[in-house]
Structure formats: C-alpha cells, structure tokens
Image (cartoon, rainbow, N blue to C red; front, side, top):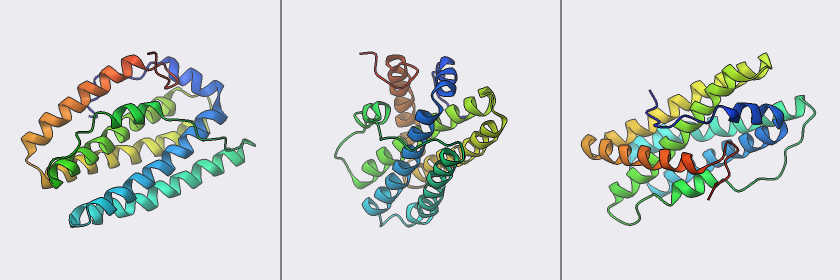
Length: 193
C-alpha cells in the first residue's frame, strides 16, 4: 500500500525497545514538526482551497498526537529529552526540486509530506507488532492508522491539482531516492556516510 521500496531494518524495533525514552522523545518532536509542516503548507499555498481545508484538521491532529506522546512519557515516569537533528528529513529535503511553478512547488511539498507519513506509518506498524509491551503496541497501532490516512491525503491532494502522470512519475523518483537514503542510514536514523 505504501509503495516504500526498502523496509526499515528489523533491528530498529529492538533499538527502540531498549531506548524507549529516546524513541518517545523523537516521536514527540516528529509530531510537533508534522504540525508545523502542515501549517507551513497552508501558509505557502493559501490559494489551493482543498489543501487548506484538508490539511488544517491535520494540524490539530498532529498537535494532539504530540500531547499523547508527552502523556505516555509522563505515565511511564520518563522525561521529554532534547530534540535531536533529524537526518532522515534533512536528507529528504535535499531532494525537493527548487523553483518552478506554484504547482511544482506544491507537488514537492506534498510528496515530501507523503513520504514522511509513509515511513512513519511503516515504522509505527513495526512497533505495533514488534514491541513486547501490549499497551505500547496498541498505542502505536493508532498512530499507524492515522499516518496511513495522512499519507493518502497528501497524495490525493497532489493528484487533485497536478496531472496524475506527473505525480506518478515524480512519486516514483521520491520512492527511489528514499530507498537509496535508507541504505545509507543506520537503524537509529544516523547516516552511515
């Protein structure tokens, strides 16, 4: 369904379970960044009414997710740590085409957002089936479902405003680039080179 060409290294779940505070901290900041990214898309493209209408509720949802992760940290007696650099997103952003028409700029923003949501969905699925803690498995199942919906929404919005063949071709380029990027990332998200 997601079209990702390279699965997350299975060792990632084991790393996540061993460093729960760190994983939940990273997750909290990812939800915060997702809300900010949605706000940015709305600010950059207010003339695209469907984008504004469909992305606006996601801002609220992502912020609610941030609060849920904060609560999970607190319930477990863990603390929100400092935000770390997100090498994955940083490297993805290098692939965005710069300039071009407004539609081309919109396409790049929507496809990058779809890519991040797809990978998040895939990782949340791994956590929902691979963690030993039943409560956390259920916790991440809910996030997986949500991310799948966001992934689909961003692609649907791209297809609503841009020729579907252009979207399809560029999405395949994004998928190829992301797979190559994943081969250069260690299971914890750090770049190997």
